Length: 347
Image 1 (cartoon, helix red, strand yellow):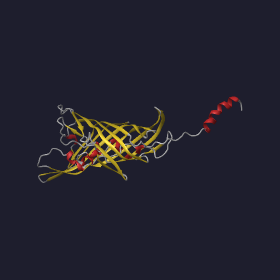
Image 2: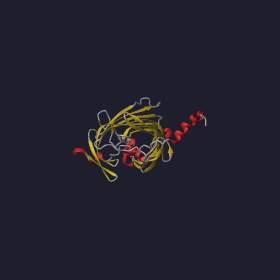
Image 3: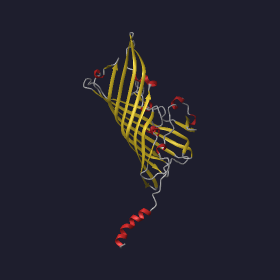
């Protein structure tokens, strides 16, 4: 073996004999007493894609004035979570203050037949803003109560969810860069409905709720199904700590029975006409990439971004009764567009 050949193969031999890269453990392990400000901003820009109306089996969709409908919504949720009891990589008790809960919506309407149509802007707020709750784990469930004995209606708490850590996106064990794992779709619920139904409702300029305000995304979201794949992309040092970046590939669906909010969809009808709802269902789908940034030293999320295509459809079947005549109304409305979510956790 001559010297040149030896020099050419030595690097390969050294690489083959080198130990494999050390695996990384991404865990949810904040220190007790840690306080995190969690800011979740959701932006959606959708447009009317389908509007179908059938009465007594006859398609009347073409008789409806052709109107372009666009809806742009920005929702901001900011809470402060203080982890009061942390055991074995899970939080058993936390105090959550609702610092900022608001939404803004712009409804754009355009029609050649109705040139007088104008854009409608609404803003929304929540009765929870400025209040605080204590979340205590009981077995696999959570008990949520008002903090410091604050007097308020317990009805405000009925739709809240304690889970807002995104720990369910982490791998089940140690992983190396390039490794992939599957995530249960339910762990993405906090992306679309952070903290549950936070009662952010639209208001008119005088602060009163608009008539028949449509249900929020949180109210239309049912059980999530589909596929979520996560891949460890890189682990690097930043500011003296190890930071992991995980790439997400998301394809989700959801269905929900909305008959409990059917009054939001009642049309304006003469008093002599009776309107009975048989079914009212929503369907949601989302496809898109995401990116999660996690601190290995601090044991919690730093950032999460998700963006992609969203489709929301609502189908209503009802009976119209008037003067002894009964007819079935079957109508479907579908909106399609883009949905973005950005989550930031700060100490």
